[in-house]
Length: 312
Image (cartoon, rainbow, N blue to C red; front, side, top):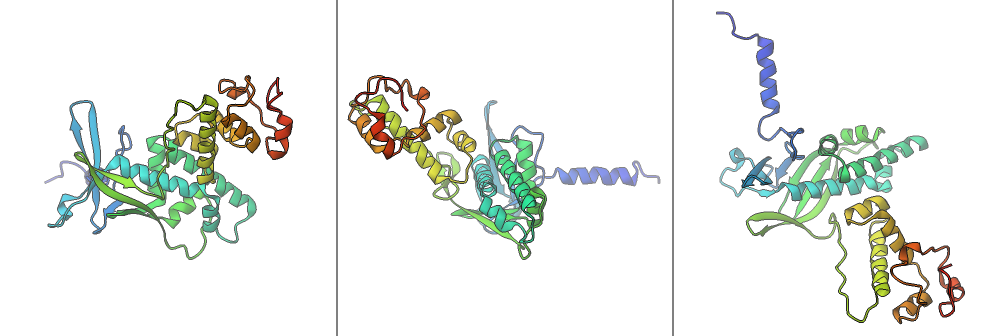
C-alpha cells in the first residue's frame, strides 16, 4: 500500500513536533518566553519545565516545575519564572560586564586588538541581558549557558566554553573545560507563591528610603542622596553608569550630578548641614551647579559667607 505522505514530509513533521515538545520549546515569539526551558534542572538532576497559571484574563503567572514524569515520589521543585530568569540574566550580565572576567577567559596568546574587541562584545552582551528584547536575551542565554541547576539555597550556572568563545568571538584559554557561576538564593513562600529571595551576591541592591525629619533642609537631604549615589558607584565599580542608573530607576544625568555633589569639600558640607550656606545655594538650583574642583583646597575660595554669584 502506498504511503499517505512521503517519508521526508513525515520526518519533517516529527522533527517540528519534537522541537516544540514540553520542556524544550522556548516560545521565542511569545510575549513571555521561557528563557531557561531545556536548560534548567533541580538539585536532584531532574529536568524542570515551564508552566503557568492564570488569574482571570489579565494576569498570567509563569513558573518552572520539576517534570511530572521525573518526580518519582520525591518533592517537586516549583519556582517563579520571573524571579529565576531575573537572577540568571543579572548574574550573567555582571559576569560579562567585568573586564577581569573576560581577560581571564581569553587565551594568553590573544592580541591586544582582539582582546579589546572581546571586551566590547562583552559590554554589549551585558547591556542586552539587562535591557534587550526577550528574543535577544534568549539568544544569548541559549548560546552561553550549558546548564542551570536550582538548589535549596543557590542557583548554579554552568557556562559553555564553546558558547563563550562564539559570543566573544575570541579563543578561550586552554583547560577551561567548564566554568560555573553561583548565586545565593533561597526559595521562600510568599502568600500562594514560591519566590526566590536573594541575599548578597547577585542581588540588585536598592538604597534604603530616606526618612525626612522636619528640621532637615532640602539641600541636606540632597546631600544624603548624593552619598547614596556615590555608594552605588563604589559597590558596582565595573557597571557602566548608564546601566547603574537603569537598574535603580534613576536618570543618568541626575545620578551623575548626585555623584559630583558627593565630592563637595568637607567645609562646604558642614556649612550646608548647619544651614549656613548662601541663600542662592538651594536644592532647586542644584542642576545648574558646576564642580571644576571642590576638594579641601578649594573650600576657602568657595567663600560661603560672602559668595554672591555661583559655585566655582
